[in-house]
Length: 191
Image 1 (cartoon, rainbow, N blue to C red):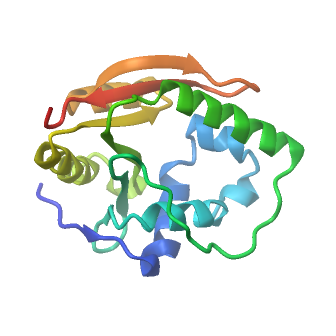
Image 2 (image 1 turned 180 degrees about the vertical axis):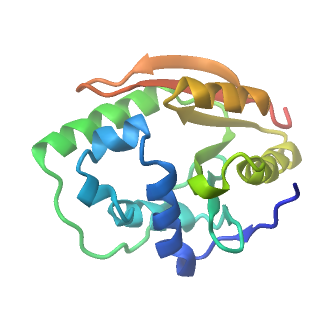
């Protein structure tokens, strides 16, 4: 099945939040960070983060935003994005964010690469090749640039899925502060 897609815009943000909440409902990292169903339900808990990632202009969405893939270009440049006011994190949340960030930084490849920050497909549309199509487009960017692709995942099922797409496990670790087990995976892309 060939899927249509386009670049995501800030106007897609609320639909991305909804698709995120549905597709990541059982995700070990997200539910460790946000265990309260009411907080997680509409996905807006990630809105500021999504705004920052989308500022790279490398987010792909289906026309109905039932699926999305958030890519970050090589060197992962920091962009100054006004995401509006936000609630300060609790001490527990801050401890979790610090533990997760430390694990991610420790396992990120040093060489330049394209980074697949997140890909999600609404459960009603999964297993139709939509997510794979969005990933294939990002892989084409890496091929064009002569670079590899890197991602992290949190389930053995996702390891199998990404392996099927040509990714290989590079590292694996347990996140401190009671966090989940994670895998870092790499695709050779255009090396």
